[in-house]
Length: 74
Image 1 (cartoon, rainbow, N blue to C red):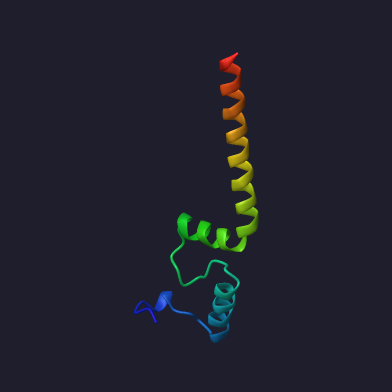
Image 2 (image 1 turned 90 degrees about the horizontal axis):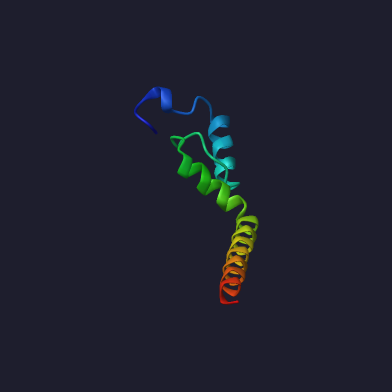
């Protein structure tokens, strides 16, 4: 419970909704919003997609470096 009454839950159902958001890895109302917090929640919900994108970016970078290096050796 926050000492500031304006930062408390108004009803038990709003508290329950925030618990559901927490369990679904979505941003909750009890936390002050920040870009890092929202990105962390997004990353938890989309771990597979972010891992795939990171692997693709790594392969693309390695491919460009290999092509660039081979081009300078000829």
